[in-house]
Each structure stands twice: as C-alpha cells, then as structure tokens.
Amino acid sequence: MPHSLQLVFTTTAWLIAFAWLWKVIAAARGLPQIPNLLLPQNNLTPPDNPSITVVVPARNEAEHIAAALHSLLAQDYPNLQIIAIDDRSTDHTGAIIDSLASQHSERLRAIHITELPSGWLGKTHAMALAASQSVTDYILFTDADVLFHPSAIRLSLANAVSTRADHLVIMPTTIIRRWDEAAILGFFQIVGLWSVRLWRISDPKSKRDALGIGAFNLLRRSAYLEIGGFEALRMEIVEDLGIGRRVKRAGLAQRVAFGSGLVSVHWASGTRGLVNVMTKNIFSAFRFYVSLLLIACLWLLLFCVAPAIGLFWSPTRIPSLIALVSVAYAYRLLGRHSNISTWNVLALPFSALVFLFILLRSMFITLKQGGVIWRGTFYSLAELRKNAAPLI
Image (tube, rainbow, N blue to C red; front, side, top):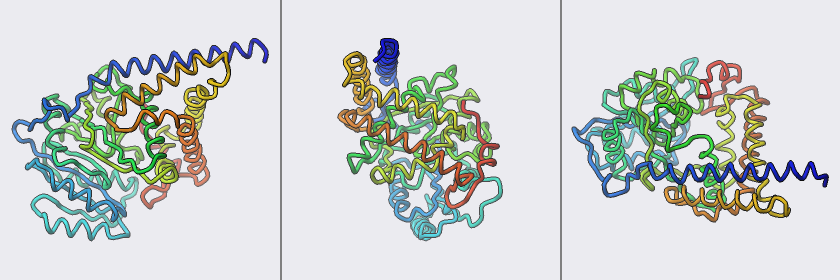
C-alpha cells in the first residue's frame, strides 16, 4: 500500500478513536446529571394534585390497546383522565376501547374518528382532537403499545412540578425478546448520543439538544398551547421530535428523566420487524434530504464498521481498539438504564449495517412511491417536504 494512503487510513482511524473517546467522556460526565425517578428521594407525590389527561391515539392496535389502557387505569395517581382515540381502525380496536370505557367511565373516555381531514396526518389529528377536548393542567401524549408502571404518572408529575418543566420526557425501557432486538436497539441508543446530548436537554442555550419521544411526551397545558399544539405539526411524521424541537425553540423548560421499567415498549419482533418499523419514518427524520441521509450512511461506515475492520490491520489496530473500548463503555453507561447488555458491542458492525440498510431502504421506498403510506393513508413527498419542520 502506498505510504500516503496508509497515512490517510491511520490518521482517519485516530480521529475516529478520539471522537468516540471525547463523546463517551462527555456522556460519562453528563448522564449522571439526569434524574432517576426510581431513586428513593424521587419517590414523591406532586404538590397541589395537578390534573393530567393521557392521550392515547390508536389505529389497528387491537393486539396492544387493552394492555396499554389497563396499565394506565392501574395508576396510583388519582387526578387522572384518559382519552383513547380510535383513529379509523379496521380491526377491533374501537370495540376494545368502548368496552373498557364503559367499565371505567369515570377515568376513560373514547373518541372515534371515521374521516381524516385534508392536510393532516392521522396521528397528529387524533392527538390534536383529544387535546382540544381536555382541560387539565398537564397532557401526556403516548402510544397504544406502551405499558406503564403503576407509579409512572405520579413520579413523572412530581418531577415535572419540582423542576418547573414545561415538557418532560421519560426515557422508555425497551422490552427485549430476542438477541437481535437487543443488538439493534442497543446500537440505536448509542447512535442517539451523537444526535442529542441528553444532559444538555435542560440547558435553554443549547437549542440543538431537543428531545421528544412518542412513548412519553408530558406537556404543561399552557406550554402545549403556546407552541401551537399539534395543529402546528399537522404533516409531521416524527411528531414527537417535532414537538420537542418547538418547545426548545420557544425557550420553554424541557426536561428528561430515567426510570427503568416506568414506561416500557416492545418496538417490534426481531430484525425484520425492526427494519419494517423504522423504514416507515426514518427518512422523514432527515427532512427527506437525500444528501443528509447519505452522510449518515458514510458516518455509520466510518465510525461503527471501520473500527472493527481496523483491528485486523496493524497500523490502525490501536486506534480501532480505543474506539471500540469507548463504544463498549457507552453501552455500559446507557445499559444502566436500558438494561441492554454491554456485550451487545460485539454486534456493533452487524447492527450498524442493519441500520444503514434501514436508512437506504426508507429513502428508496419513499422516493420510488413518491411519498409515504402512514397509518393507512398516502402522503405525497412534495406535500411532506412543503410542511416539514426545520431540522433544528
């Protein structure tokens, strides 16, 4: 190999190693600053008993909706209302919601949507409609396949009140049933360290560090109205992140907290299931820019695949080892809260290539069909790009 080319490879390997080392040191210093709601000092009840509405949009969720609603009905916080929205379901979702609502009419209300207005995504329309019919101090937006620990609402509200949060995100715990789910979702968390610094979420000066997660977006009602609610995100596929970005840009108080098992969700079954779930919306996270997605693919190859290959070539062995040890420590840091084993670092190249495949597949399918099929409705790419929110 020519000396100049060897120098390029070696220099690149060292730059990647130092980048990973820097990122993990920052995470090691920052993540402990994030409150853990399971610690004894956080086992609180919010003062003044603020009211809360939990909004649960559901379309063809007959398999999951009953368990999700039962977990909400079992909450140990009294001042709680639940609105479950049957969004044009073609299965038994609506019947299940109605049955539970009749049994728990004091806490659970059902809304049925039969037609989708023009200019709306189904999910954003469902959540906006439910929010408009609530009058509580706080609104929690969640998904129909999320399971809540009995103390989840009480502990999260206590944290929101004590920290004066306008928007609180609880990091959900992924339910793992197969080794490949752990490998891919563990990797997804590691990549997340590069997209948002969780420990900077509460810093109002750090505008790029904004967060929203569909499983648990808790908003003060006044803050929800101030940012324009979901009416301002009518065509936003990644509406959870969109609401988080709007909160941060408005200068409102955004918070994040850990709590293993408080909010749990099983994303999908195995590699195939995760590929299908992520394919639907991952291109939208790049605002449908091909160039940004391809840069992300290159990053995956350089930062997550190349270090594993570099172990087998002596000039890059040491920096590659530094990079992989840093990644392993990142797995350990996040695994304390996600319960995903550090040993999943051994699947790093596999997980990176799967994620790269998801990115490319999402882009090609969206471009080929000229848009996105989302919750049973087709939306043109031109319409989605026109209404896409800014990246930051």
